[in-house]
Amino acid sequence: MTTPFPLLKLPQLPFIVYVQALHLWSLINLSVCSLRTRNSIKECRKEISVLAKPRSFMISCDGVRFFINLEDERTGERPTDIIQMNKTAVRIVRKQDNFWLIKCSAILDGWKLVMEHLMNTFHVSINLEIVGERHLYEYLTGHPKNPKIDELTVSSNFVDDVDMKFYLENFHNDELCFLSNQNKTFRFNGIFGSFKIFTCMPAEWITRENLLSLNCERIKLDQCSLTNEDLNMALKKWIDGRSPQLSVMEIGLRLEYIQIAKIMDGIEILKEASLQEQYVVYHRFDDLC
Image (tube, rainbow, N blue to C red; front, side, top):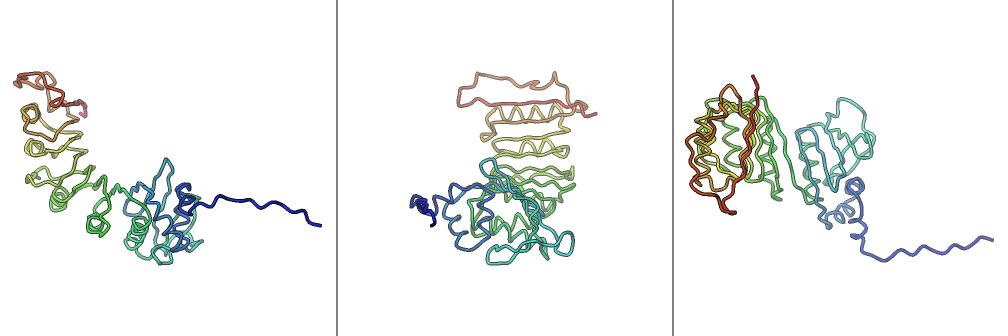
């Protein structure tokens, strides 16, 4: 005779409540199982951060990370699983619980497929890091979902003048960052997007004219070749209130171009700033000789 066991009675909660309790690994795995589960996850509007590079994604949420890399299907390991992304069968290699290697015939198509799936499933904020792939930025900014791009980083060895002008004029989010070199003859034309932070490392090509034309909340430059005259003109403009948006300026200067004792030389402070007028100034001197 079999022994009867009492049935475990689970609380009758909406399925969305259970989905909200899942961590990132489970959510991503469930999102590629079926359209129904993906739609259930979509209803939660779970917020994730995505660091997107031309061949990889790092997805973060609540301190948990998930990695997706793209690889040509003709090279490397054979796929071990097939998943569904946007009604498309995708072959993958499961490297770890939180690491997929997606096999694709064209890397660009694979990149768009993954990004489209993430945007269709989650509430996404994106940090885009590119080398010369301007088309990836244009794809995101022209997308109907209008995804939030927190930061655009261009890490090319060299950015040509046309692309540089495009980024400066068309970036309308938080931080625009250049980890790249540029023509020393390049000049800003005074037409900028609405970015809050401008970061440039190295910034040897940033001239006095370029610095004076910037007006955003924060400027971060490293390895500058600005002289005392250049820096003092920028500081005077700031102190005179002619850079109304600027609140923080952080500049890494080279000692062969600057004399510390002459910083603020000739600039007169007429009155102590009120609480509303206070500015935070950072200065750092790097001997890079």
